[in-house]
Length: 501
Image (cartoon, rainbow, N blue to C red; front, side, top):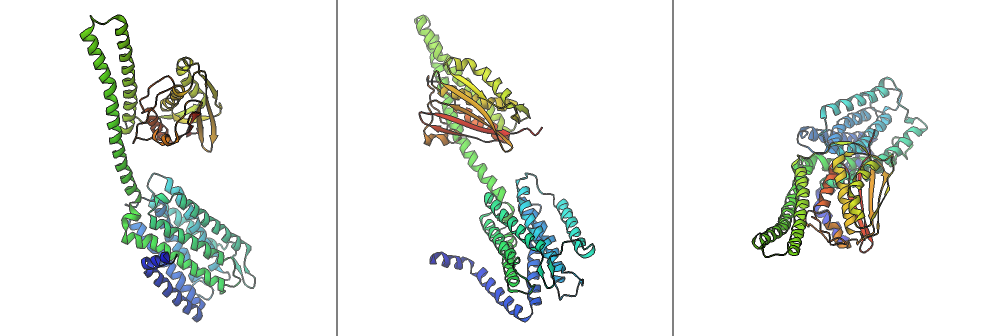
């Protein structure tokens, strides 16, 4: 523990010293004049807010994180409202009036900040780049409404009453803001991979300090109370963390804030090239085997047709037929996968009832199932309508059902069912076949290792079908996974978006 503290102080001693000096300065100012203390604190925070906006604005053409973009825009207007909060504080004579405007501007500012923290996660999911001009106009519009509602129309709810203290509206809104900040921390943790590690940590600490600040502001009765003072310390510390996350990092490590997604994409692309190289090496090896068999057997028949009996020729022809089918299945899957990777094959989603899609596929495979006396039971709800590419979805179901038949024991049962989960339809294909060892499950859907096993009647597979299924499902906005117990059977799950119509 001591070693960790020592290491932290060694790596962050400048920050610690800065905070200590600031705390000393502000403690002196509060003893001299609370108004001076309040003004210095707020102006410090305003400078940080404007600095965050300036960094964001000047890097708007390069920054690839929509969360940081929308937050950077918002802090321009948060800084404006904070400035109005400062100059309307009781005792300041810039904007005289009968009400406690400063308390109203405080609530408006903190709510805008908390709302922006949540809004940022919605923008983070959007693939399109944020429209800076439109965002600024929207924030300017709402900021103007807030200012007019407080200073001109005077319809903003009262937040402080002389002789009474804070109003119920003020206190309950503070708790709402605390909840919004807490929700932002939860969301930030969920998408932490999209942020530089240092920025993620600093933003998290900033949000925690904001919660502490807001809690202090639920306790005071007087604008000059101790809890009010402590709340301002927490606010300053929160803005200091924000400064380090955006402003300082923006200058010392611009790639960390501007190009995090680009760097991740580059690394992911590099790994996928390595995986595909290995995958193609495996495919090339597998293609040689059946063609070698074809060439060997055909040459044997060609050179020895007059010497071979009918039974021998039939046996060689059967083995040639099996080798050609294996080659054809492998090539068909490989070509489909290659078209998808090259961008030639793109999904054309339409609304399709899940039972219709399943029934069409089952009819194609009935003969294959009957050959092993396997029953396929359907438990699909007719109200479950997906929005997906029909051909791709059929290919997935056909591949998974073919595998289920291949690895099922004769006279067994396969169940195909659907159920609704949020905005998705989840498909389940359940067999009671040979199952898969736990250690081999991750290999089934990986490019790194083309894994195949023989069916219950020694049926062979290409090893590419499941990889193609994964690509088709993901390009249509779904996921695919499986659960299996060796010797007991396997369940494949996949999801597709539900139709909104």
